[in-house]
Structure formats: structure tokens, C-alpha cells
Length: 287
Ligand code: GLU
Picture: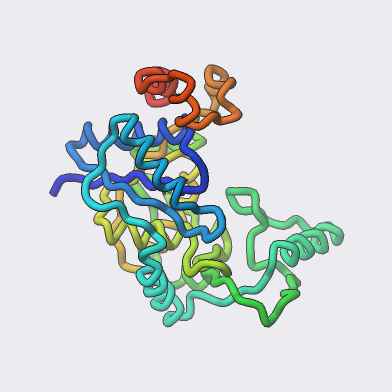
């Protein structure tokens, strides 16, 4: 079976050079491996995801010359698949409802810090749950569902958990990497406002689509630990991973002018060609 890659943007705005870099990394890796690329629209956010941005993604990819195979998978059409995975984890007692709002969490952090306690943070810098003495201010409101990390780690047994990194992490991690899901605490798997979260949807959909190779930005490198944990819990296959450098990374000076992230559409309207885009992102592709 030929390898299956995917490009999985979120339609919450117009694509910019960072997305062009990601797309080029995906299509280049697929070409090298003799694989094909699927397109998935990650539109789980009921407020920020917009059909016009999804349409613009297809238009921009066509302009860049990147073609995908088969129908586009829109995550919002497949919430039943995500809910099924949630139900399976729930039936094993690995998920619990949580009504803590951002303000509740901020209050618990402030309280802990006022008592001189250090609040552990996840790799994204957010306070790690569970949090001591956090109080739900709206105990009757709609809950999010969180993974009980301790129970989940107990449920996967002792077999080492990791992944094969064909690119590199922010600290140069490559080759066989050990997953550290406990760095993240009790992550949200289904949001209050939508029946899944990024982490759950990405692993369920990668498995359903038969994705064998995940190529994406280094900003998602540490999240791979959660994805591997969920794959193990749900009995899903392990893809290979390649995390690529970001444009705003160490060597970002060259593209400093683009920090404001003009959209590909506006660059196109200003007269940029596909070759101009490729020239701008090429230094970041060579990892
Ligand atoms: N939808 C995610 C994003 O646009 C990418 C998800 C992934 O590649 O795993 O950042």
C-alpha cells in the first residue's frame, strides 16, 4: 500500500506563508515516499471555522499547484465518529465532565500562587489540570470532557509509548522519541461547545483516513505525546511523524517582514507568483 499523507488546515482565516510552508513540506514528503495526499478541513470550532475560509484553502492550494486525492474530509461532518471514540473512553472510566471555565482556572492558579505554590504548566504554557481547589462557578452549565491522565496512563500498561520522528522537535528530538503525555495533564477531549477537541479529532480522523505519515509544524511536536496516548487507548495504528521548522523559528529573520502574516491571497493580488512563494519558503524546507 502506498503511504498516505494529509494536509489538515483549520479554516479559521486565510492561509499565509506558514501554511504554504506546511503544504510544501507535506507534498514534498509524499512525493519522496511515492505517497498520496488527502485534504482534511479541521473545522471543529463552531465560531471561528467558516465555509468561506475552507473554500479559500482549496483555491490557494490549487494556485500553489498542490492536488489532493479523493473527497475532502470536513471534520464537522464526522462528529459521530468522534463521539463514538469519546463513548469508548467514557465506558472505561477514562473521561470525566469538567465545568471549569477559563476564569475558574485563572482563579485557582492565582489562589495557589498567592500561597506560594508553583502551578505546573503544560508544554503550551497553560496550567495543568487537575488543579488543587479549583471551583466550578457554573456547576449546572454544559461540561467539557477531559481525559483522566492518571487513569489513562494506568490503562496503557508498561509497554513504552513513543513515535518515530522523521523531522525534528524544537529541541532537535529525532528518531525514536519517548512520549510524555503526563506533561499535559487532563486534556480536553470534547469541548463545551463542540463534541470533540483537536487532539481527539486528529487521531480518530487520521486512523479513519488511513493516514500513515503525519507531516506538520513543530508547534505540534509535543502534542504528539497526547496523540500517541489516544491511539494506544483506542487501538489505532501509529503513523510516522515529521515535524517541520516554522517560519518564525530560529532563522526567521529572513521573513521578518512577513511576521504580520499577509495572506497568500493578498500576496497573489500584489503580483506574487507561485515561484515567489516557493522561493520565500525554501530556506525553511531544507531541514
Ligand atoms: N489543523 C491543525 C492546524 O491547522 C493541524 C493539525 C495537524 O496537522 O495535526 O494547525
